[in-house]
Amino acid sequence: MLKLFDTYERKIRPFTPLNPPQVKLYACGLTVYDYAHIGNLRSYIFEDILRRVLEFNGHDVLHVQNITDVGHLTDDADAGEDKMEVGTRRAGKSAWEIAEIFTEAFKQDLAQLNIHEPHIWCKATDHIAEQIAMIQCIEANGYTYRTSDGIYFDTSRLDDYGYIARLNIEGLQAGSRVAISEKRNPTDFALWKFSPPDAQRQMEWDSPWGVGFPGWHIECSAMAVKYLGTYFDIHCGGEDHIMVHHPNEIAQMQACHNTRLANFWLHGYFLQLDGLKMSKSSGDFLRLQTIIDRGYDPLVYRYFCLGGHYRSKLTFNWQAMDGAATALQRLRTAVSQWPDPTQPDETFLANFTNQVNDDLNMPRALAVTWNLVKSDMPNGTKKATIVEFDRVLGLRLADWQPEAEQPIPNEVQALAAQRQAARAAKDWAQADALRDQIAAAGYDITDTPSGPELKPRAANA
Ligand code: AMP
Ligand code: ZN
Image (cartoon, rainbow, N blue to C red; front, side, top):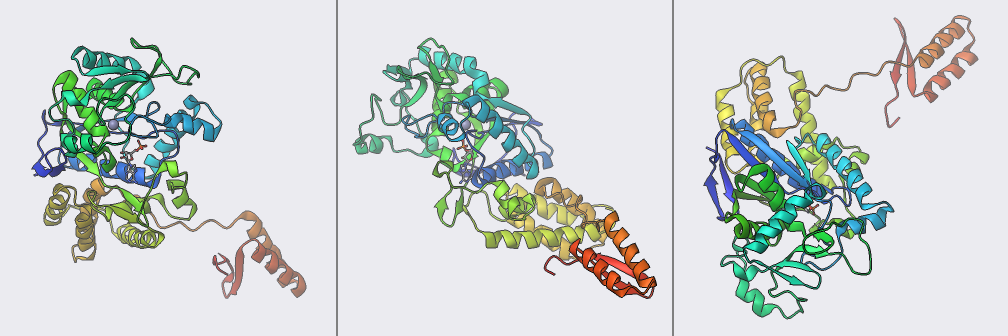
């Protein structure tokens, strides 16, 4: 039986689909004003594992993920700039262009990490009408007010606003000494923001309230409802969403449809860099390409992430990546030496299933994997079992082959033939000069009783 930690209830609960065998899953997507950093990617690896574990349990997952291409401000309290505008300034391109560039780059990252793409991608800017309709619904039910810069949600109208975050609303009200603009309550948030009167935004739309753009939170509620309905199985995102974004998504749902949107709320904890939070706005972050440029296979990062439970922070450093690289290489080499799969071993399969079903305990699932490798099972059984494990691990274990020896280039073979001819003519100077040319092309030539042999020079030679 699959058990998952539900942030809403703050406890581990047995998971049963609302409408079996289908499981509807919504994941908060990337804000595409920059590349994804490896922290973001940790969250998407966690969500991929979640989806794979659901599928491993025989569920039929419908995975929807948004792309935030408007409205996510640099400040969670509705001040600050739209992150997309920051991105356009940095890249010298339009907001529409950078959205496309970074969406494509993100999809490539996902492919390189063997993360399944969602069945439905939905962009905020493609769903302005749905967002406006939902704001109208919230307004009709009496939860909104207008300020000089937008339409806001009045969180004091809900008895349990912020329940998922266990917010202490009275404490927040009393402790809020900073000016909260025209907001009535510190936790109120923008549903629709007006374009500045003195400047034209690149992304803006007409609405019943005036020209402007949607607030960030409304996109997820409106698109989740459109594709998954008003109450579905699982909503997930990174831990930062527990305090603001998800309470606001839930508030919008309560105001409009009187549900809490999802039966389970799951959150992946942050990747940190030597104790520091990694953030895109710092302008200095690691992305998957940084890892690849350092010579790592991208799946080494996936393996590294599997080594930490999704509900613990994980600290990134290069030493840990080297450890992951060695482990993955040993795993792949072992699997590549096994013969064709026979039948999986039921006991190992049951152990692995128990671990992944225990709130996605991937560190323990990896330990079961290593126990299998070291066991004295027949290798065909090991192979069949690990192929099953890899449906969840996603490390492409059965596909990997030791690097094939590269064919010797024709030019190098021609030089070797000329050298043979020079030797036959006893032209030793010419033979030595040809050996040097062969070396310069990256090959060593050795004379053996059965003739000369060409080998690539060792990298450090
Ligand atoms: P954003 O692009 O800011 O909308 O974030 C995309 C996803 O990455 C969200 O689910 C965030 O919660 C998550 N996220 C952001 N920073 C980190 C981090 N350092 N570690 C793990 N997940 C993160
Ligand atoms: Zn969201």
